[in-house]
Image (tube, rainbow, N blue to C red):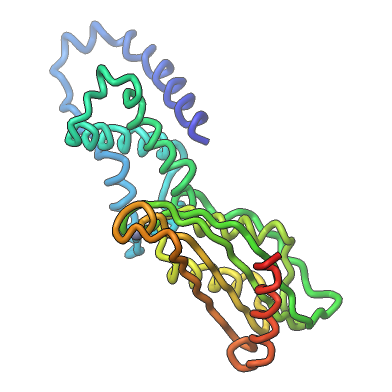
Length: 265
Ligand SMILES: [Zn+2]
């Protein structure tokens, strides 16, 4: 998508050149038209659209609807420039240090196209099938590996996620691999584990409409290992229970004991 945007700009640029050259004599004779105001940075244009639509744009919100084709290219250039400023303020000589010459570009690209991609792209396509067999037994998907970064420090969060579903005859079923795709879309944003798991549960409730839903996430937070208390043992586990998992303690126990088995295996 990014490459297409760049190519488009280039082609338009060449196309625009010809009429300009043809009119060059006329232009010098007539008074100069007023110059258009320099256009706003891409991030400000996107921010203006979000504000106009009164939409939240926190670190873990997806803003893809407000980004026009080709604009991710502009964002990439903008983030690169700002990161160059950060390296400068860290007093790193990026002009003679061959290791950091391209760091601003690399980090900008990593943020926009990899680790925070889930903010900027539309949700992955998921086909839902009607529950034709009227399955109504506990289904468990996991462990799904999840990778994210904490909103507080932008340090990695690496962990595992389990989903328990209790379908009913009105539920939709989705392919197994889609659970990973949806989790990746939610997690590749700066996140807070408690909010990530709620976003995942809301999305699955909407897609699957089960009778009950359980989501458990266990994750290592590198802002605890690498800095701060430097505790390498601490993991955070949290869970969200909805519908029949909330009401039925036996179902909840069954789910938790089954994922414990998987955990040890
Ligand atoms: Zn943190």
